[in-house]
Length: 240
Image (cartoon, rainbow, N blue to C red; front, side, top):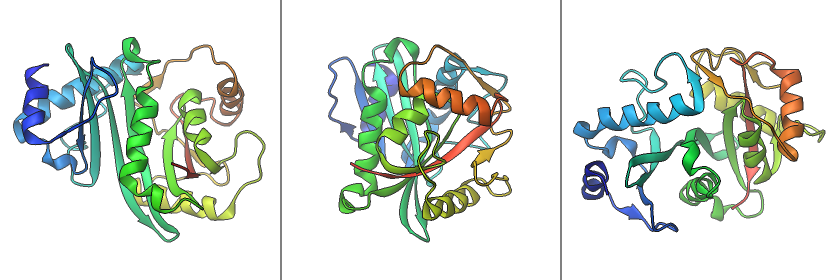
């Protein structure tokens, strides 16, 4: 493994990896990443984003750092270095505990191996979702990627905005507005479509051919947010 992964291993324990070629590190408090490793790790995270998106400037910066104690972080290393990461936050809303996916990225060469699903399972496990088996836990994300939206919606009992024709849930709509206000103060959320204009002014989504549910989601997104800078803010009741 790389020197970075060895440093992380000293700082924090590993998660048992389902893959022989990957080492996985979990930081429930992202501020536990040692200060000397933050800059190279941030650069590696921004490097993955720059591959997956058309980026005009770094997404994570010293001013908007993923190493704040409000964030939790999961990192996946191969022998070549960092290949995937997931940043998330635990929140308390009026309706109860919630989890928010702040950002998950996987290098293209490592996509299709189940890493996104692995991240989701770990995030839900850490959030205490198993303690709410009847209702599920409030689970939020912001995206304009149809595949990401479909994957997250698939683990939810209900979700708002509903892109596939289901009726809207007023409680979820309220949670969506509250969560967005906590995470992005001052950012306007258009109701009832839950559209956040200009969310991705510095990064542009790479469009691709979509299949199955993702193609239906893409069609709905194309109607709601044709501008690549806009995003949908979504909340659902996630099941473990």
